[in-house]
Image (cartoon, rainbow over all chains, first blue to last red; front, top):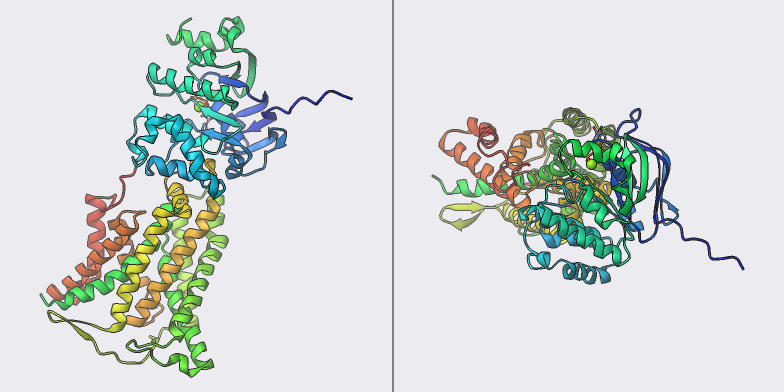
Length: 252
Length: 304
Ligand SMILES: Nc1ncnc2c1ncn2[C@@H]1O[C@H](COP(=O)(O)OP(=O)(O)OP(=O)(O)O)[C@@H](O)[C@H]1O
Ligand SMILES: [Mg+2]
């Protein structure tokens, strides 16, 4: 008897080329793979193509060539609204909630793809994770603070119990204290079995919660390694952290 | 002022409101001003006319007026089919024209110009098929009932008002209480995010066309019943419809109806106080004032 085959990666891309215009690839040939239950952070300077990569995986940016896979299934051609039905949830970098809808409606909208009988239970489960949202269900999402909006965006993504959760810079514009809360929440979700892919500029905080990091530069993966050792890696400093340090941020 | 102004204004206003709901929904979701919307009114009215004549030819009893109204069962039956046909027409125009332009990511001005072209084509086809001579659903005369305070209304008018009220409430509930309504509001705010949460945007667009076309058809039939049918009946409503949609706030169904009534009442009052020749100027003045003073409209949200 042969050993059980290794489970397929939770999420993978093969030689992915993607971009907004046909003749202008932004993501230029990326092989990227995330194990089931892993917490991976994607780092890289501004304009490196991090958002474009995750948007292409989510179905929001045209894929020119290559493929994307979710738990071994090829999802390259499935339209954006189908990805979430396959178990892939995405929280975009900006405008990631419906400001004109209430908190309840934001969550219900996400739940609408579930069988009717499960909707209320799964929304309640999310409310129990986010008591701040539960206490203000009727509030217009547009009236929430920045931190609450990010929480709502994450909560909305969780309603469908995704197997993989991709977040694009959820810490942007938040105070360090709130960033800590958001990341702790992500760590807990990861502990509960959800595979997480996090795009971040906030290097230190991200490396503290992630298992592994990859660094994207000019549309290509330039380096990867365990989060714990990556921040002291000289190549990383050169590619990325050095540039950040010169800007006086994240000095290390 | 003669209190009859109130009835006349409400009647015209209810019609504007119904048409404006279609305009406001398609505008908020498709993101362009569809100047062919008014031709859906005309098409719906003429489709109902052709179908009810055909039904009447099959069975003369269907033309027998249902007391106290002026029309027989042929009209509501034909109206139901006409609603479906108008919906199909809207879907066809979208498939042939607007959908292709969306796919090419055409600019808003291109979409608007295309809608002018579609309007012209539809209007000419209707004029070709039915001639420009006015037509009527029925030749029955109706006695206007006294409503007190010197106001009078025919049973047809009262029925139309009631139907308009029911439709507004129905569409409002659809938007606020149902899954498809939630998807429509989500798409109108952020199409990309709606896709990410699992909304099939193309399906929502189809539903919006069907809904807008259905309301346009019903408004067209009402206009044909209360006034007359002419190939230019929709075109003449274009300005008041857009004035009402924008005054109400793009995307707001109660706003569109409220604003439709305001435009209708303002027109009726102007006819009475200033003169009938000023009637068409009213919608224009309202439109300009809203755009200058409160571009988000009465019940609309400020655009981010
Ligand atoms: N909607 C768009 N249309 C065309 N080009 C775009 C679009 N969005 C981003 N780009 C371009 O794609 C490149 C990569 O942008 P992207 O947003 O993926 O970078 P990023 O790594 O996420 O940067 P940041 O850290 O600032 O979020 C940039 O050159 C940018 O100008
Ligand atoms: Mg980005």
